[in-house]
Length: 203
Image 1 (cartoon, rainbow, N blue to C red):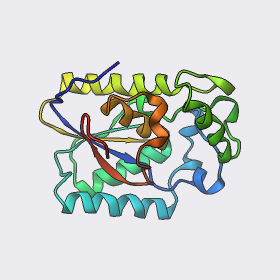
Image 2: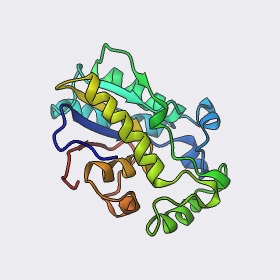
Image 3: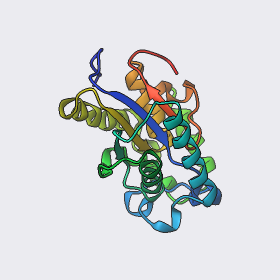
Image 4: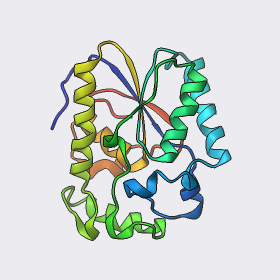
């Protein structure tokens, strides 16, 4: 799946702020586990999101007319709520399962150091499902399908996508028309970082 060369809307991404799962150093990628409020943002994470949203508002990138789509995971839900508040967005937050965390299969609820075992295989095969993980290609296709839908639904809007590190790294390969196996070679997206995505332009 590839994006059109010209997009009708402007797309911004934000990785959720520091979460309690980050602090515990565990992988929490299953849709059921991810919605637990026990693993929402830390206080520091909330402050990170607030600061990023304030900066985006002050610099004029995002405003009260921004449309917000978010992963339903609790750490993203809280991130979206804070962004909505800071930007004074009146419209509701749209939750879409296509923005959910990449599923890490057998590594669910294990130490976060196991991410690297998956990434090491990604660089050679974006379609791999070793350890029962969701492949990088599958992640790219599901998120780009959302972007395709948003292109059909909206015109000349600023759209903020609230999601997870791996998902957003992989989404960027779609905008750059690169293989999803290259997602770890792109500029690292820090927690609570807001970045605009432009077709064919490396960040």
